[in-house]
Length: 289
Image (cartoon, rainbow, N blue to C red; front, top):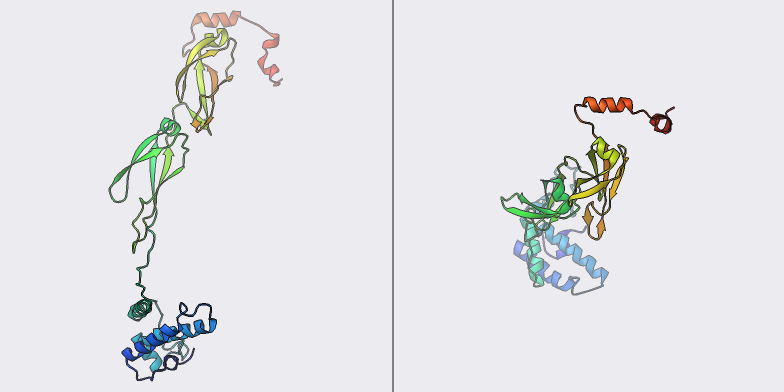
């Protein structure tokens, strides 16, 4: 970079006002807005800008005058007099104000978006399946009711636009994200939009068939148990799963034969007397033997 005094056309003894006046005149003449597309003039404008930035900063000007730094701001003696440049400063601020004033533009404070904030909320299983509302307390002490959409899954994140930390310099607020943690259910297990459930039935219901009430996420449903049902048989309850828009899951009910806690003598005697071989050899039928 050239000598900044020569670039601005002022002597080294020039006062700050003389330096500013010289830059003022050159900037009006060489500004890119006045000379669009002229790369030579654009380069010249960059040179006078860099020169003014150095000479309008008392500390930098002093270092240059004492021979401690070059015209581009680099140290002259292997870093002996090097000072870490942290940016900004009164000189830079004055310079930016001057450029803005030259062309009728006011400096705007630097805007930055506020940081996002993450919260977590525990939601009951059925509320996550069917939808509901949860109240969340925000960082500023305010509370907000968050809509839990139907078919919300564990780990889903709900966005609250503009409810994060405030921005600076007039910048927008950040967002808040509410992470959903779903409580387990005593007997429902979710499989995407489907529901799985183990349904205990008695021995007589399994052998003779019956109509039993089976819970679903939508309420209790009376379901016919076919006669001769074995433990592990699965009944499909169409459309009784979780709804998401136009899609509906199913519920799969696995029948589990439950013997009484105390088996009475009559049942034991009946089982001993009831013997049937051949096609009732269940392990052989399963291929175990």
